[in-house]
Amino acid sequence: MEEQKSETTREWQRLVQEFQKKSDRAVAILGTTYLNTHLSRLLGCFLIDDEKISNMLLGEENPLGTFEARIKAAFGFGLISRTEYHDLVLIWHIRNRFIRDMGEGKFAEEDIRGLCKRLRIPDEVILQDENPTPRRLFVFGTAILAQQLMFRANEANEEKRTLRDNFILVNIE
Figure (tube, rainbow, N blue to C red):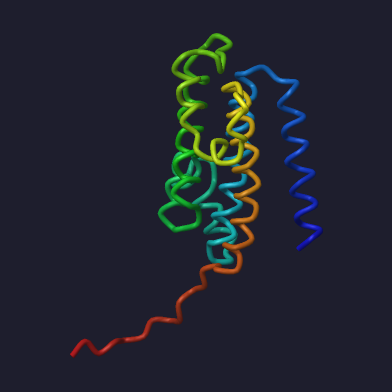
């Protein structure tokens, strides 16, 4: 478990360092891609051990293949908290804003800045006297959520769904 925490910390640090070199648009798209990958892993850890079924559900063109569908499924299955759901939905909206904007897009733009300021997780962790930029709120929120999703995947693996016994005729009288 300690080794896993160390690996998670290294991955989190690598993510934050990588984001420092990228444009705002790249940070938004890469950050959500990173979260999408962790959501897929989380859901995969929860589903029955059947690779074919997992691929049919989680594959890119399949029912749980989009970032939005994975967010909703993870919340609906009780795999993430209400706060994690709230922030993932905001991050999904932020990403969509950057994708729709064929220009570069900036975290300083009014609508994106407003969405970043509504993120709850950074607000709970960042000190009150700090005044982080919208980009920093996004990066920090994404990194914390990625870390949380890794831990949630381990929890989900312990709650992994199992196949039901074969069909049994039940007497309904």
